[in-house]
Image 1 (cartoon, one colour):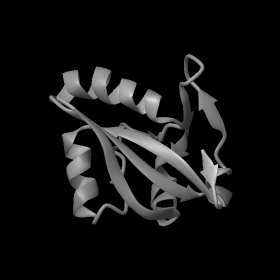
Image 2: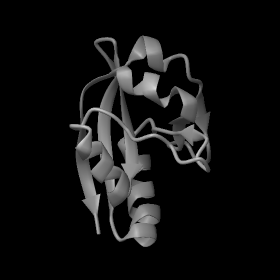
Image 3: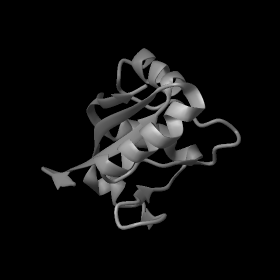
Image 4: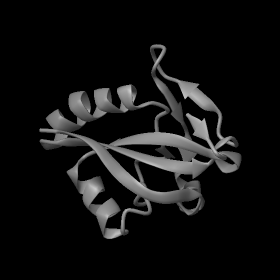
Length: 116
């Protein structure tokens, strides 16, 4: 969703990633691990809920949906990737660009849903 030059994105995370986001002052996502070449925020909350609930909870005991805004001019450089059904749209951000991506986040990253 785009408003006022900003694109609203969502990111499902587990408890470890959420802790690192909190340590950043709720302003950035942690670097990817070597086996994670892509950072993929998703385009809608419904899809983020599916991942947090159906993947993060079984894998780590809890899942969280985060919501944040990125400058649209920056976000538009990444092509939207559909990875399944109609709602399964993601941005694929190469891991080496995550620092720049983080610098284009406007405001704070907020938790909108929690699953246990």
